[in-house]
Length: 206
Ligand SMILES: Nc1nc2c(ncn2[C@@H]2O[C@H](COP(=O)(O)OP(=O)(O)OP(=O)(O)O)[C@@H](O)[C@H]2O)c(=O)[nH]1
Ligand SMILES: [Zn+2]
Image (tube, rainbow, N blue to C red; front, side):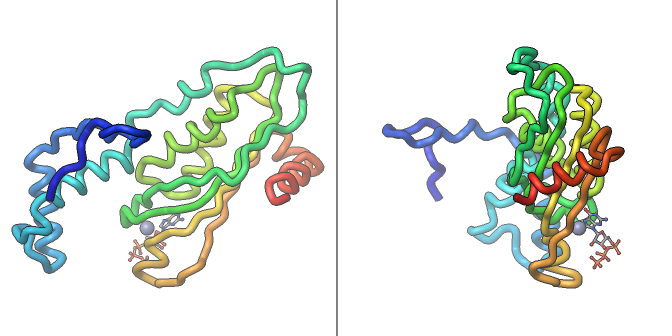
């Protein structure tokens, strides 16, 4: 098979990043898994697979090299006196469960009530990705995102709701297709004040 070119051939094609080298022992581990699954790692179609799988896992787990707090280090003080809820909703994400290393696919709603300053809105999605692109359980992912915003922005409140489907439940094991898991973490006013909690939940599901 011919590898795709690293550089765009022209037009608006997106350049492929340079491929990282994959250590021999990592490739050997994936060859063992292929053999154990019942296939022959030396057959033509599988020869390059161990290196591809390893690179794919580096990408799925790129959050280990991404400091979530760093994304919240730049704040904007002047926002015209805005002191209401800021919500980023329906943020798609992909993660992998730490029990089966199977995909967790879902969306997150992240809200906070600012105290004096706000953060660039894309940064909430970056914080989510930094935690999601690791081996996770959904409860910890939810708590880590909320705690990171709470600790770094020191807002009046944080609300994180995550809805996801777990391939370890749909593609294997109990095989219940269509089942979704919902987790939430409410902090500050969203935990202590019922009206604020209702308001943020209504916005998330509007
Ligand atoms: N609470 C929680 N459980 C998860 C998450 N992802 C996967 N799991 C569960 O982790 C559990 C692991 O249970 P085990 O009994 O050790 O593993 P298993 O024999 O493969 O279990 P089954 O999936 O029931 O076949 C399973 O019930 C999974 O559904 C998650 O994000 N949060
Ligand atoms: Zn799992």
